[in-house]
Image (cartoon, rainbow, N blue to C red):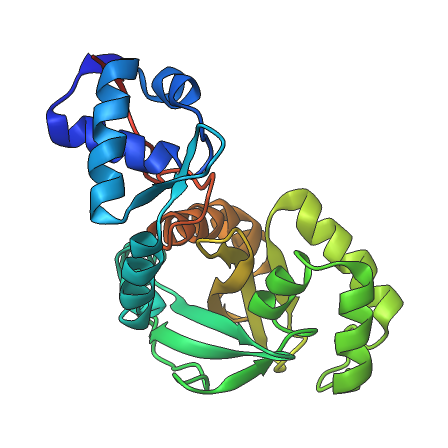
Amino acid sequence: MVREGSSIDKALAVLEAIAEHHRVTDIAAATGVSKSTVHRILQSLVDWGFARADGRGGYEPGPRILTLAGRVMNRFDPARQASGALNALHERIGYTTHFAIRSGDEAVYVDKLEGRRPYQMPSRVGMSLRLHCTAIGKAVLAQLGADEVRAICARTGMPAPTPTTLATPEALLADLESVRSRGYSLDNEENLPGILCVGAPVFDHTGQVLGGISISALAMDMGREDLERFAPDVVAAAREVSAALGAPGAPGAATAPVLNG
C-alpha cells in the first residue's frame, strides 16, 4: 500500500533497500521515494558510515551496519525473542511446549513450558536431544540435504531407544520427505516410550534452520488424532518465532512500506 511517510520512514526504507539494490533509480522504484530524496538520504548514510559508494555509480551497505549488527547479535537471545509465541501456544494448547536450538549433531532445549497436566515431561532446559528420533530433531533434519542427514546419522550411530525409532538412514529420509510435505514432524514414541510430540522448524535471520518448537504429552493423554489437530497451531507458532528472529519471508516479518516522495 502506497502512503505518505515521514523523513525517518523514507530513510529507513532506503537503508533497507540498499541491501538488495545499488542504483539510485532501483532504490527509488523499490521504496517509492523520489530519486532526489533517495540521493539526499544516501549522502547522509554515507556520512554516517551506513552506506558507501561502490565506485560504479551505485551504493552498497557501509561498515557501520556490520558494526551495529555485531553489537546487536552479541545481545540477541533467541529464547527471549521466541517467548511471546511459545507462551501463546502453551496457553492455547495446554501441553508441554519446547524450544530447542541445533548444536552440531544434536539440539539443546533453551525453553520449556510445562503442560497443565497432572504429570511432567522429563525434559529440561539445557538438556540435549537426538535429531533422528525427536519431533524437533526431525523438523531440523527435514531442512537439510540428504547427504548431510546421512553424515549426521553416521556420526551419531542412530541409537534406537524404543521399538518405533527409525533406526536406518533410509527409513529416516523417507519420513523426512513426509515432514517437508506436510510442514511438521511427529515423534510417535520414538524417543521415549509413551510420549508423543509434534514439532515444526524455526529459521534464523539468514533463512537457515535454527531449531524447532514442539508440544509433548503422554500417549494416553494425546492420541495421534490430537497430534494432527494441533499441528497447524505448532506450525503457526514456529513461523511466528521465525519472524521474531528476523527470518526472511516469514509471515509477520518486518517489511519496509512503499512511500511517496
